[in-house]
Amino acid sequence: MKTVDTTARDANPYLGGARVGVILPSLNSTTEADFAWLAPRGISFHAARIPFTRTTAEDLAAMNRGVADAARLLATIPPDLVAYACTSGSFVGGVAAGEALAAEIAAITQCPVVTTSGAMVAALKSLGISRLALATPYIEAVTASEADFLRDTGVDVVATACLGLIGPTVRDTTRERIVAVARAADRPEAEAVFVSCTDLRAFEAVAEMEEALGKPVLTSNQVTLWGILERLGHPAAVPGAGRLLAT
Image (cartoon, rainbow, N blue to C red; front, side):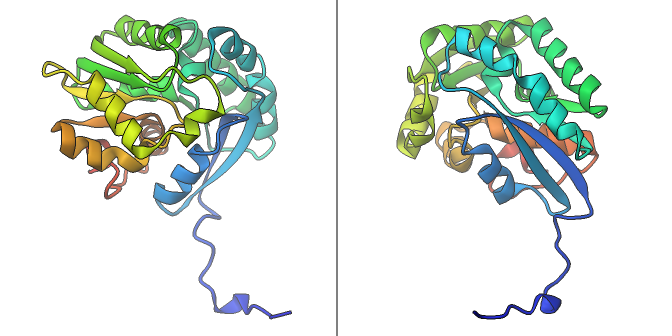
């Protein structure tokens, strides 16, 4: 067996800094990879999963009943911040339900909480965006729920487009299809396009979509990472990650 000389290495840049707990649907295999790829050094991510298989309103509500157990696991770290990295899980039931879920996680973990849907709204406000096109991999009913959530926060959703997916096939959606659904949702009056779902590999295509559409494009993992950095007081420019993270 080859011996590795660890004394020659620099100190691990991900230890000794901020610890971020991440609550994820069990089928999600994209968020951790996106965060590891683009998050600045000095932040470590620690995930807890909750059982989930299909993006329907009923399954989302059932999944959210497991959030408290995941938060209790993360509380043992303890984290400096917790992110509930599920867009649909944090908008199902409306704005009040999302806020209540965040408050429950905060009470258990005793730290600040970012939810993907909350970060989405905050990011839109940060960019001064009030008219939005919404693209999702979801079925129409779940897409309509997200549009209603956004409208309840004061965002004018001018158009939507969706792929009609409900399970692990979301992560296998090709880059070309992601760009195509963003194009399908876009309208001239939309100031930006939001591409939803933390298991969709949309973060990788942000720069391409912004160039093609000529406007800001936001994605679920992008706004979640932005929200984490903002709450930690750790703003950092992330090259190639879209206008939201450009400065």
